[in-house]
Image 1 (cartoon, protein in one colour):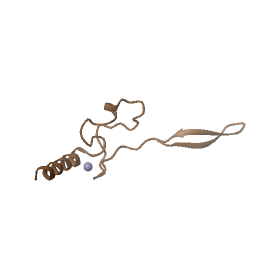
Image 2 (cartoon, rainbow, N blue to C red):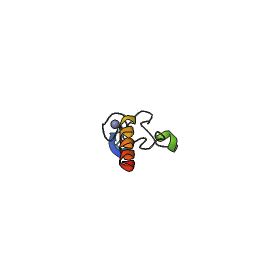
Image 3 (cartoon, rainbow, N blue to C red):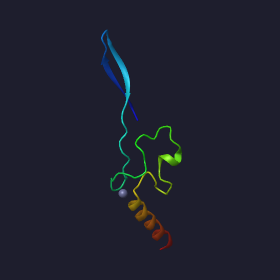
Length: 78
Ligand SMILES: [Zn+2]
């Protein structure tokens, strides 16, 4: 979350104020679909509230994670 400086004109002078950008919805890294269970603003949240407690949770959607985990297992055990 980058901060953005915005100049606001007040009655007497121009003041620079720091405005936070609204975070975008978390999306899957492979298919780009929005992820479920991940809030927009994850500041001040505990680790378990920030992402799904699964491998690739909060990074890939359930479908892509499932496929990737399957692929990993197939490669490992032939
Ligand atoms: Zn996906």
